[in-house]
Image 1 (tube, rainbow, N blue to C red):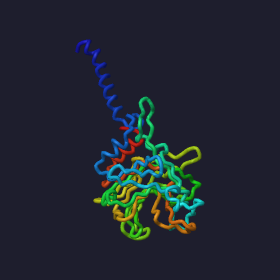
Image 2 (cartoon, rainbow, N blue to C red):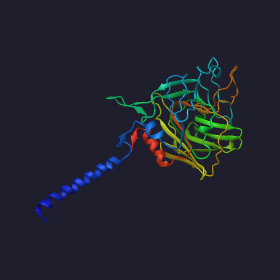
Image 3 (cartoon, rainbow, N blue to C red):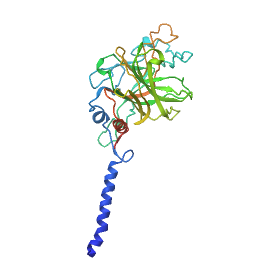
Length: 338
């Protein structure tokens, strides 16, 4: 071997190692990947299974809540747009005693639209400026109602997803709080995505999803809950971190799965799903058509299970997205392109 080759060989090897390191860095994930700002356009809308998508970025409550797939717009229902639901003084009906109705105060029908967005990957990037997340809605007793349409009702397999931020604290009434609800209660059909109080640790919440199996009463629903990750509630001066939620149902295997921030957090097998065929979709509350007890004089109805916090980018698919796709949605929405 010539002396020149002996000298050059270590340099060549060093160059190869450097190239491999460069490639490896390009394939890494959170924290070292390229920033991502096109969640709606590049991650959500191109999915062939999507059947409905509500960004929830409107500027005022009299605007329709746009749906970008087939035009199933919703209506913002709050103390301004539906004052009959929130009579003066704005009521705060306490949760009736007993375990059957685990609802909370109806709040004051408050909504804040065009609030700072919670999906970092859904942003615009003005020339020369840092990216600005697209806006979202923040609710407390208010909600979006989308009238029933078979176009956005999954009949067999499905995925529903949403980005949320919890704004209630440990001192607020303990109750279930629905992110979205598209159920009928007699018989029990449809599906929902919500926060539930922990069965063994009062005051602690876990994310959960449910499907109706066509039965009645509590046995009419199958529930899957986060088995590892409790919800971090907001604290004074320290709002909770936004979370990505996805509920999937695979009809051939009858498997109901819950994901939180891309990670599987619960799974139930032998789960039967019967789709809702009559009731609207509600985003930010549960079954508003149910009359609460007791009712204030003159009140028509009020939302059960009101969510308190931010909600953005609600989507429905007529397929059970794979875990890899769920991870991509979580990453891209968080602002990473792994």
